[in-house]
Image 1 (cartoon, rainbow, N blue to C red):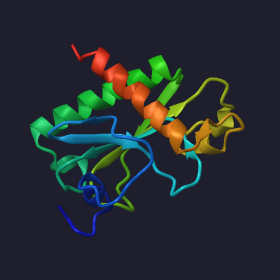
Image 2 (cartoon, rainbow, N blue to C red):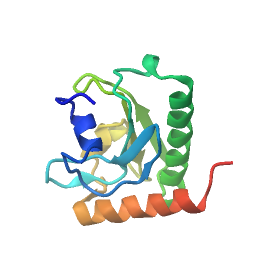
Image 3 (cartoon, rainbow, N blue to C red):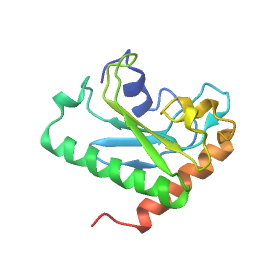
Length: 151
């Protein structure tokens, strides 16, 4: 753990974020993005590697497998239960040097000029919600993962 790392602190419970834990195992932690008390874009999921490494290149094989499998499962959940028509996936690492991936749902009828992982936030049909709605979404995805094991 790096003491000044936002993601490490989140994993150790010293920082609270919107929603609830969607999934956690020995390698990854999954939750919803937090917008500092403002409405959240519903369906912006974060996959955090538990071990503090800066990029994809530093993952070991077990971490890489866990990261890839949960990425696929979450993307499927967003499509099947939240009706996303597309799921964006990106790793930036510019502001927080701890490996994490953004999965961002794009919903039907989003105008093409708002296609993109962060452009969807500005779409006229953006699904924005308070913490209670984020928690409900987290619980739906968690239940989906529990009832649809990876095979």
